[in-house]
Image (tube, rainbow, N blue to C red; front, side, top):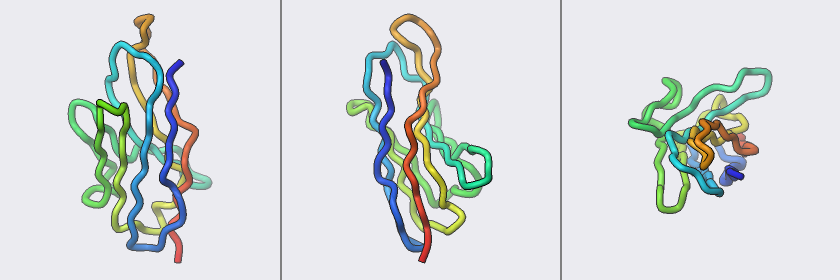
Length: 118
């Protein structure tokens, strides 16, 4: 069974930084991409950043957030700098992969809360 576990969320002041981590466990055939989504209260879940053939970012986080992967550790990171109150949300890790049974599968983590407030 493939699982994603996020960590690194918390309370930070505007202008501050946080780094989120997401560790994937379980055996797979192929990892196609990993990414981060977020969902603010009363809003739909939105893509923040993805790491596949190339990294992609939401316009609202470009030049502030950086996604990176350590394939040896099956871990994806999201470095968040210059945080703004509007970045407050639950952040979810996502993986698109091929299982050992040859099935395409999308897996989600449980989410980690990021609160940007003074």
